[in-house]
Image (cartoon, rainbow, N blue to C red; front, side):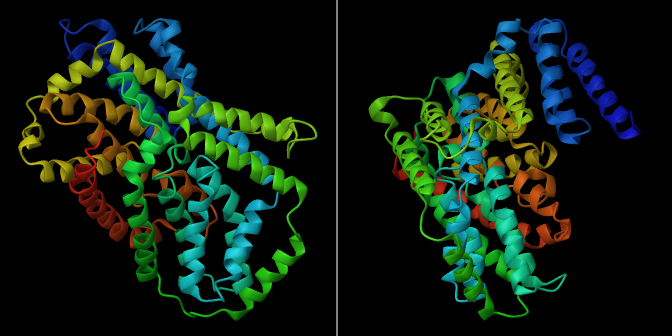
Length: 465
């Protein structure tokens, strides 16, 4: 064990002890233990000294061994539809990756740019938005598109520290983050938010509801992202005529749509239709995703073998299940009530009298919290219960503040570790932390303005939730 790992574990154990002893005997043991485990888990998840999945297992074991809950409750998070929706989404992405659909879409859009850097950046940002309709999880879309963007960089023969190269790579990372805004299964944070609202408030949000609430934010963030990146990284050349010819050649080399691609498109279209029509048939979003996996894997019907489809990140599955279980235990043990009482006298509780200021403060707090708790799943599951408790104490709509906070946490534009798309793009070695700051700072300011404007106008007009 190295020094960083040992230090992180010491801090985690110390915080657990402080929570257990410091809260006093008047607070039930289950609540104290849960708060202590949550604080310790945040330290381990934020420091990343051990894999996320391993920390998740440690959380589950700790909840049972400390007596914070029974084993049935500790494992109850894995029975939630959110886990199976993401598992199904990752399997769907594996199947789609075995077809040329992603390449075909990228080549077709790039061929229409006519080598203009403005249009090329538009295409790089728009492709993840289109893929968000049927490939859940921002990280999966980024992993699918990153090799294609790198191949475009090579075709353009861009210099090592080229502004155009930074435009494309940062455009992919930030475009992927934004692509998770309005499509419910398109980001893990969205799915977890819906589950948390169901656990704490018994409030259900459908696929269409989520889109209806958030699409103005999505539509505003796309051009804002393009503008901020263009301003941050001026291109040395604005026209690359060779790109159009190369993309057309690659598109021609793929040939017409294969029967496999047509079957894949049909399955994806059916899945999206079932997601959109959930209010008619009442199926949880996980069921259409799992049906799609079955259809994509069946011999003679599907587009990939079962062995290929199941190659997914099960560490992420453990993370999702454990964070949902932690959310359930925080509620059942009374831990959130303890936190809410502690926050009751805080100055921001009085902001209910100034809704505009309340919205701005909540957005800034969510951003700051995400800077400390970099993992989106952890940030959502630990921050939203506090938001709900405080909102109920303030007498304001907890659903509004929860969705507002969840979208804010999705927009991690400042630090590399805030989102998986930025981690993946940074891993190429072509982009550094300073590059993310150059475009991320103005984009973060822009997102705060957009979220605030939508919250005080659109959400008010549609009588949100």
